[in-house]
Image 1 (cartoon, rainbow, N blue to C red):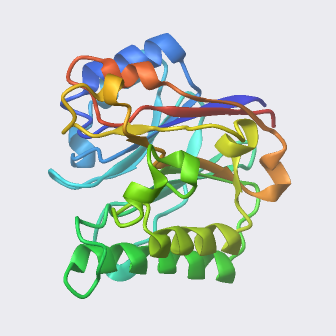
Image 2 (image 1 turned 180 degrees about the vertical axis):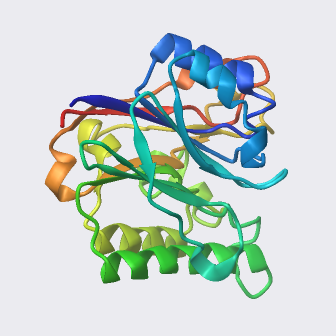
Length: 262
């Protein structure tokens, strides 16, 4: 059963409902994983998504912060969530499709501005969250699974617009990259996007602070699609839809897509 999956940090699902609907109409992925929904679950505009064929939804929400949701054209079973680092945040949800594939949707903490846990509690929380993910994957090795989401780390030199300038900037510091690598190794996760697009600069996020994000192109690849080794070879056709960052009142993230022939 081939299916196309998309992941997108929407930065408020209610505020950007028209953008989500436009994306679903234009691209029609089978599954859409959203992060930073900033909404209680009962306030997510589920009916509008259902009208487009996304009749299945599982989600975890909070008022004004965090929040993750999976919209699907196909039946999907809610198989739980994890509160890594005991933050009490809605940052993870897992769903299982009828073909047995488990989809993990993550919103890893951004980590604040200072890459030093001694002066920045949020940075410590980010590292602890990744450590919790790592330990879980060590303890319960994932199989037949896809992990997507805003992981808030751009690990490779060509995942950022300037490697040297960003080495001390949160999202590309060596300690974050190390933690993400340990998390990936613990689950033997394969980076599907980079499997498909192994070379060249690749970004999924551009700051709102830039007066002309497109011309400046100071991007980072913060949004990821991973798969376990048993199904990684089934993943293909990876894309990052940069043009969607140019929508009116956009999210600062662009959707990332991949297709799996399973």
